[in-house]
Image (cartoon, rainbow, N blue to C red; front, side):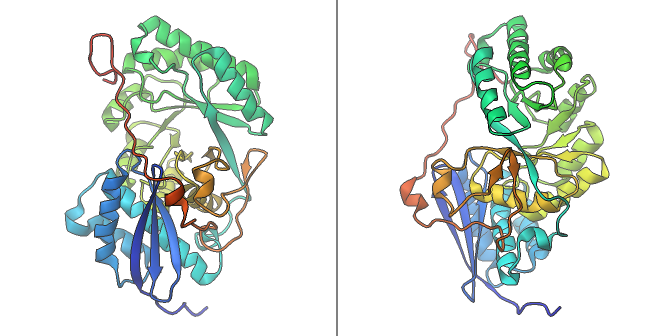
Length: 381
């Protein structure tokens, strides 16, 4: 097969849609690719980084995804951080989109073909303040054909609860969800960094009779060492990694925490190139990939493309992308049928950006204060 004629990167643009940052790369022959950057708390920082990196890679061949990934990673002295990683992620997705369009094939076909025919979704729309409330939402997951869900068994003001009530309330919520969905159904639990190590260990012991699929981020992920100390006292599968940005951090998780699931966010962990590398680390350690995917439909499309081709992929988080602002961002989001993401057949990522989306949904920055305890201190510690 003759390699396609070289192209050059000519322009890199960014668009803020609600809290989502979209990246578009245009080549000298007019081919365009799109990506999504997920530093959702500070997307303006990621946007500035996209433009800085974009100036550095203009003129390069967009087909050289591996070289450009490494070039951006080491540009200006190998600095790290979420704004840099998120910028790299968005650009990388757009380059893979161009590669697929250039060769008229879905991205999964360029990543080794099909390791599976579809991807199991894990429903995210479960929440509430009481066991009855979360049970009602869990029934929606069952009715839609899902076989897995993930939820946080915590009320909004968890930091005001005393230790026994905090743990027991969480168990009551878990019990209500298990009773609703039955045993032939997987339940992922995201503690959402809401417990101290001692609380998380006790909760995990009490949760064991309900057979949770995994426990995600039982403590604030400030360091691999702290997470490993909790992991040694847990007897349930640990899931980690949604805030992490590259292969080096995931290597340490694999070696130090004995985790069962990696949860890289494809829009902050290096895009398709970066998460493909993370998936290889996971495969070598018998770890499953269950990506963090609470972003927009472009990131979802990238996840589906990589997940179809990756042996270590497991479940993919599913949100309602048929509702605005997500539904207005692309022509048609990835299809979910009876709880499964279907095989995409369109070239590239398989979605097209709606240029009018920024007008429909202007930038809406996040302003989320940390929880405050009764004594006035910050509730995450």
